[in-house]
Image 1: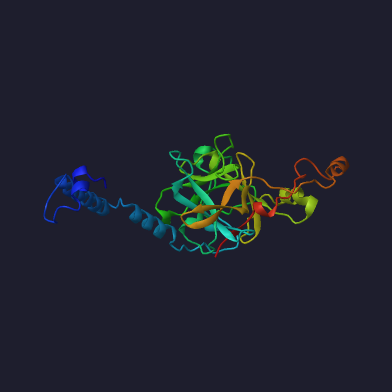
Image 2: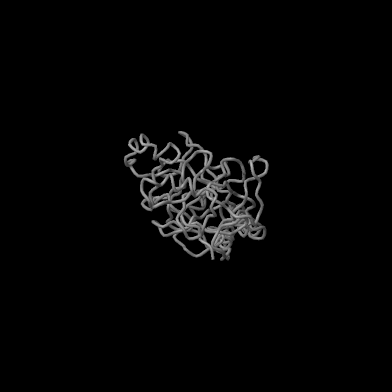
Length: 292
């Protein structure tokens, strides 16, 4: 508080009952501050109250759907092996102010709660997919889908999305292609699961042959962003501070083995083609769909 010259000059010379300087202004200012605080408290606009409500909503325990294969309408979690955490969101924190794109990270908790569980949904009808799917139908490798945030958050329909990297748009730390939650359900919110093969140079062949098979739970998969061709990625050496503690950054970045073993020879022999000659993604791109 700023003191007037009269207050400073008379601080040690007057008794407690003597009113000096702008005493009435000080009293009215104090009364106004108390009134504003009470109004904000009654209307739920206090910063601490908002934060407590957010933490309570995010920490609600959620039951995962039971089963061995994924179906549309299921509630799932995405576990990341190298970091030991789960894909999570903070639908209150915008990555860039005013763009309504909210933070996505990998949290250290392995308990399914509202912020780290998602609902698998078919691609929106207005996107005019060749085949329309409904809730209850099985999800297959190579089949497009949306991931929607849990309804328990009370933030409406927000979808896991990504967008083409530009000089002005990227992840906050590594500046790779950003991944975020968005209310816009368009092609940027469409994802695809791909099979993970442990057969080395035959990765592409096994992936091609697995198209149409049901996606199993608790099995490593690669989650591909259809619009840009980049895979969901998390590096356990890149962490960022959030309101939930230290978590790992999530972005879209296909991290693959550095070589193609005998690719030219195999293509010359006809044992490999452009559609099957695929390098395997590294562990940072591999996720497991957790179900009960």
